[in-house]
Length: 455
Ligand SMILES: Cc1cc2nc3c(=O)[nH]c(=O)nc-3n(C[C@H](O)[C@H](O)[C@H](O)COP(=O)(O)OP(=O)(O)OC[C@H]3O[C@@H](n4cnc5c(N)ncnc54)[C@H](O)[C@@H]3O)c2cc1C
Image 1: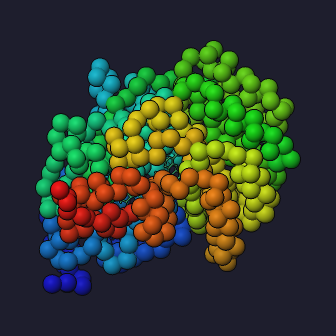
Image 2: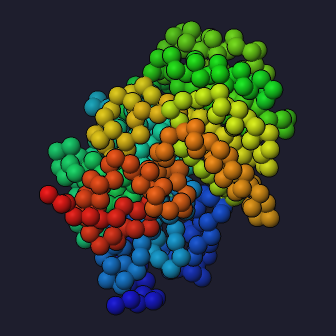
Image 3: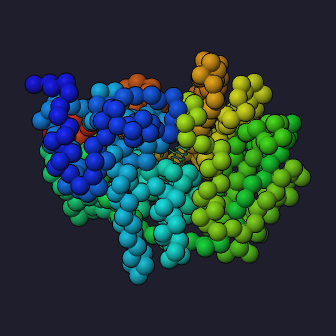
């Protein structure tokens, strides 16, 4: 039986956290997510302060026939952390972070952001592969895979996941690890939010910093082609300890430019030698590569991505940064309609590529780069032009890219794109989904259809 407006006061009375309904002062802020394009009105938002609250929320939603969306950091471009006429299970109060320095492990609640995680782990001189924006949630990021500057050294965030505490659609609390519920653990490492609500994550940590060599190098658009060709050859030959992201963006002077962002995870003297060719090429119009605290490096992207701006993203993985692809992106960027839009190549390889494609649910192990077309603008009147620019560039790059796409960069793009994201692992993911969520209770996500095991 579907009840249109359940009595959320009953849920509120049952939990340590709070339920925010329309009309409450906090409702408008609580329903917003990072992407200003998303404007949805949930029936209620339940801010869970403990695992019991998550169980109560799931049981309440199931017994009232209400759909749920799950919110970690609220950063997802598709806006799946919120929804119309549903219950949002919001983990933002679950902020605990415990670091075990001796065992180099950290356990963090499902509402922790990367800025919070990095600050705490760096107090011990440790870190793991994390997001480039401090306000990105560890939850959605890790469940989708998790690409960051340290991935070439240590693998993706999901490769560093040791265990997760999960509340299933049946309201059951499970531990997922290599030893317990290992099929669920496999699915959580790249299968997104399909299998349950993850209330805590345990990560492997590594010695990082506190100072690492990093910064920006920029060239004018007129030299972008040569710079990209140099970047292609350079980035293919560097050690795992060096990651170099490349981009096209509008500089502070209003002129478009090609940028490279080297981040060296290791001794500063080795880093200086490793990045020297990059700094000598050109000469660049900007070079601010210096030793910096790792936590500062992890905030580089923050000014470019304020919350609430209108955003539309397209993405693909790229095996070969061909001359043709370079020409296409530069040609398109000459016509970019907004100063806030970027094209980014995330430098993959290294440890990421040494994991078998079926070892975790995240299977995109071999691409050299992840290509991101990030369209951002301020005025809703400009939406059509900015979306069209991103779509057109993506169409042009498609034949020059791999078919795969990173699930965390997907918008609302249909079932084929979801299958492209899960790729060779889709059938096994469907079986895991069937085992843990056969009724597809967790469906407001990049959804995997449950399918029983055939054998
Ligand atoms: C500015 C910006 C920068 C980014 N940079 C990077 C980057 O460097 N590398 C990278 O890999 N990605 C990056 N991303 C993408 C990011 O990984 C995804 O947006 C990711 O989904 C964010 O996680 P979240 O918890 O903040 O998202 P949310 O929007 O809260 O959640 C996204 C989805 O994850 C699931 N989910 C969230 N929390 C839980 C939970 N506790 N249990 C179960 N399911 C859950 C749900 O299905 C939800 O719909 C970036 C995004 C933005 C906006």
